[in-house]
Image (cartoon, one colour):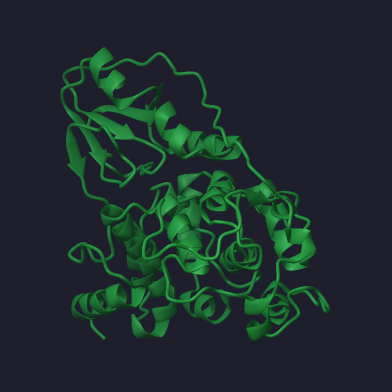
Length: 368
């Protein structure tokens, strides 16, 4: 089923208000479960994890009764904290092993793995820019553990297509599955995939015990690999006008917050840097999505070029931007993003170490 993601800010906030965090906790692992579909808006900085949590708590829920939902929000913050202190494009804890290739499976590119739950999810990714989190893990396990492909290029392929593409979250999750950011690789067998994707396949190459999967030779259908070139086509830069007497607020792929300095006069620029998208390419679908989201910000102007050229060419002396690990070469006033627990910073080797601190913080802030 193809999913459409609205780009209207009012509709997005209505979607936040419709969250059922209890039902989410019970069913989120199922492809037809009560997931929120808010991840594209959180990743693009339209809304924040803190904003979502506060809106849900305002309905009267307590942290303990919606802990599963709160944890999933905190996973997103956690990955961002990791990216602030580590290069998530390299193996974080240890090298993935064994690795037979640094390419991508043709069967994954073509959605022809023979595993219906995975192939359907890949088709949906191409059509809608979304893939259920469980299916992301299934795909990564097939690629990295069943076929022994290194995680980096396949992770870049998935990020390229995801409307909610967050490089930290995506890269750390692929590494977790591949054993480069975890103590054990993640495997999924056919029974597990059937259960959560509503399929009934039997006698596939994944229809085995977990012990057998860990020892399995690479199936023939997963043996062909290929390099791929991922490229972003950016729109033409618009003619922009800068009032030198006003501050300039810089928006980008990770910050499209309509509330940021909302009531202050200023120049508002959506900055799309070719060098950034050369390093972290995304599809036309993703670019169209952010251009549409940017319309929620009154009087925003589009600039395609480097941060330095923007500042230099328009003699901007008073610029503001939000912190993000992928911002490089920015200057001016850096402002923090919204965090669920802004005081808890630095690197934690596991989410559970991070969560222990956050849970204590939330208990103190919101009560039991």
